[in-house]
Structures are given as structure tokens and as C-alpha cells.
Amino acid sequence: MSYSRLSYKNLQHITHTQDPFRGTMNFPMYADRRQPYSCFQLVEVGNSIEYHVAYHRTSEEIEISEERYNLLKDVRGKSVHKKDREWQSYDFFEYKRTPNTMAIARSDNTVEFVKPNYWQGERKKLSEWMGFYAYHFEGYRFGGDGMVRNIADGGGQATFPIFKGLRINVETCQPHESLDIKVFHRTVDRKKSKVLMERYKKGLDVADAMLKCLDTDTMMVSVKELLEEHRKKDDNGNAYLSTDDMMKIGDNLLDSGAEFEASLMYAMGLQLDGFSVYSIEAYKGVNRYHRVCEPKNLVTRIKSHIAKKAYNIHKPFIETEVPFLGTKGSEWGLRVVVNGVEVRS
Image: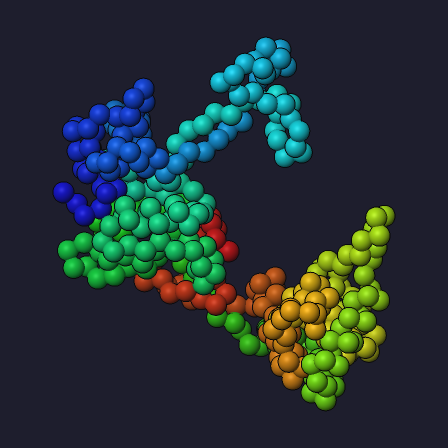
């Protein structure tokens, strides 16, 4: 038997030696049958069998008629619903609950990942079931999900991105022959990035010189005054200013030559330490403490955050193709192309 619970032979052995859960074709992943949410379904596809591995359940809205809703709405044990949220798809519906399929194991000993991303509990289960000391993670350096895993028979260690439609051999982690996968590692092109930051450099350098002459208390007085000046009030008298609006106001202030005020507004828009609306209002309050970015460090932090936003929008990157099983994370994420189609950008 393989060390991976997701190998086809292991799953097949379970179907030959254990009974499914009552009334279903859902087989347990563990010998302990008190864990019904860790299961797999036996699915016949043509002349072969697939095993759909699941963890917990998912719900799908099924449309019903108004007449059926009225007929069943007061019946205990029957759950029918009327639309009361904008995001709901149907006027009258019921929920169909099915196992939350995460991967499909096939007879060629491959496993296919079927979700665009995985929650923490799902990643933990897949790490355990993949075996060989696998660790399924989610991180910005991969632009999403990835996995580190030892390869069977002393084949070393593999690190690779995970995305919907990825199909790999359970033992070797090699992609299925139907997939032509290209992974690109990103680094910043300094010439292109310099152009993106030209607008901010001169103005923020002026603000930096002014801020270095201030202490934190004096700076926070100016921050509170600037916030009150630009906050909008709704019909109920509640004051509000979104972070997007803060960044736009900061741009306008910078263009008008108010570099000091622009830097403070950018700090609020970027939610730097101590610059959230709650922290500003609570500053020096009774029994309240909030870490505040010091004036001398403020512009450096602002430039770093603005640069990241600009790079993610305009992508001034140099891309280098790397092996699928030898993928290294990048500060700016990865780009993945499968059969000529970009699946991660």
C-alpha cells in the first residue's frame, strides 16, 4: 500500500473491505466511522471508477415553485426558503447538501484538485491525505495555494503551485501528460518601477523633511484635524471616509502642493500603524494604547506601500520560467499558464 491516502489502490482497498455510510456510496477515509465528514464517493464514469474525496458538505440552491413553498413552509423537518437576500438566486428554493469534493483520484494513480482555493481546514486534510510529509499552504508569494512534499522512493522534495484542474501523480507529483504547465517567477524591473514612482518621489521627500521635525503627539493633532476636515456625514449624522477616498484626496493634495497633508492622508488610506479611524479617535484615550508609526518612518512606509500597489496594478516585472516541481515563491506572486491559458496571474 502507498503512504498516501489518496492513492487509487488505497481508496479501492477501502471500497472492497468496508461498507459505505448508510444509504449512500460515501466511504470513510478513516477506520473510525465516527468521522462521516471525511469521506469519498465512488463515481462510475464510463467503464472506470473515480473516487471523489470530500471533507464536510456544501450547499446548492435548488429552485422550487411558489406553490411547493406554500405547501411545505410549515412542515417540520422540511426546509424551504423564500428569497430575502440580494445574493440569493431564486425567489423560492431549497438547499441540496452534498459532500464538499476537494480532489478526484483516478485509476492511473493521479489526483486532480477541483477547487480554485482551499480553506485552512481543507488544506490541513489534504496535507494529511497526500502523505509523504506534505504541507498544503496558501501564501502571497505563490499568489494562492501551493504544496511542499517529499517524493516517493527518495526522489527528493517538490514544491509546486496548486490550482483548479491540476492533476498530478500521487507518488511522483509529476503533472498528467495532458497538462502543459509553465510557471513564471517574478522580479521587479527597476527601470519600469522607477517611472511609476516618479510622481510621488519629490512631494513625499518634502513631506519627509517636515515630518522629521515633529514629535508623534504634534503629528496626531494634525491627523485628527485633517480627518475631520474631509470626513463626510450621511443622513443620520454618521461621519465616514473610505480608504479609497483617502487615497484620492491624498493625490489631490499632493498635486496642489500640500505635501505634508498628502502624506498624512496617504497614511490613513494605507491604514499604517495608528492611522485607522478608530486608532486616531482613540489616541491618548483613557486605558487605550495603539502603536503609532513614528513621523521619521512615515514616508518610508508610505513609499513602500504605494510601490506595492502600483506594481500589482501595472506589473513592471521581469519573468523567468522555473520548473513546476522546483517552484520558488516570489514577493510579487507567480504567473501560471496551463495549455496556453493563464490560470494564475
